[in-house]
Length: 453
Image (cartoon, rainbow, N blue to C red; front, side, top):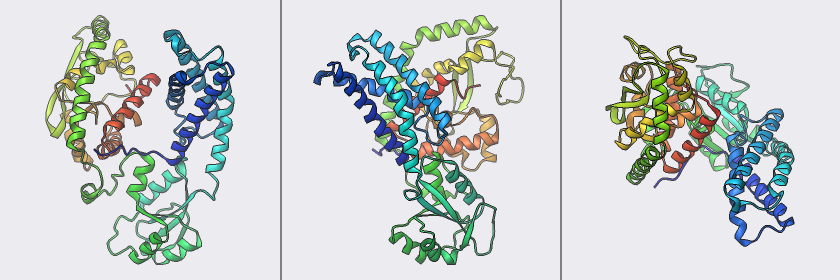
């Protein structure tokens, strides 16, 4: 079974590991002063550490690009520690046996609120030192090179420092992307002069353009050599579909979940949907009643969607729009859509409108995690406008997905293209562990009330 291969930066993993040790160490140290820690109490330490780290994660403290400015960092740390204090206080009330001693948790949270910002500033200073960063050279100056360069400059999760570009000998496709250090024939001299540690190939047409001997010499000398699509995928968690060749999809690693993975995914889906139906039955009954009382019409809404291998199926949702919301040609929902009812707006924000799709999962038409299913009318339009769009139907559609937790609600061809980049990434790295992380992210999206319209 292929292991989980989501984009995770070395900086993020290092920071997570350090702060996990910091939290657990503070808990053990503080509890020891009160004499409330022994061998049998370590499960309490692990549980409290997990809940603290979950609060930090849900406040995006491990997304180093999003939370980089010191002011933003301080706000997030205070918010996360406050949330941890509330969660741990609730835990001590609900599960008294999880208590670690008088004042232990309060003191730990107070110390974390002070030490975490200081540790983050120190970590940022150490990891952004020019001596520990990888010096990146981009071969090419076209649109793809510019896209990759923009992401390198704007992110803080990876220790990349863009040094410059090598121009195509003819200057074809040249754009103002940054300092041009020379042409392809100068590759060896440029690598040595600028102490390059990573070369990114971003040429639209490589046939007869690459200095193979120079690239091989650089790689054997310890310089990383990779194509722009690989760099982009690692940094962004999506596939660079610009100028994507079918051969890349065919020969690339991934895109082939094993039978064991698919079987385990189906077992997990069926078990989860069955359990969810039982647990959320009272919520679904109340939601259905609220929908009926709020506006005339049925509580459930049925709509044809395109599923795995392009097969149509009937999707079930709680109705969130007026019954006369759509007449004639289908149209996308939009921000602040006037067709959405009062209750409809609430159940969309909380994702309660999706609960009837447990039935679609039980029937095997959907999975918990996968690309969101689209209507046949829009699929026909998008397939004509976006290359490789139909590839997303190679797996079952999902109640949630990588695109849904990483990108806002889509209502245009441009949005569909961006979501396709995420969907292809999910399909390439499909695994049970990846599904679990997406479900965790989905809870974060629901709590923060993002993405739904």
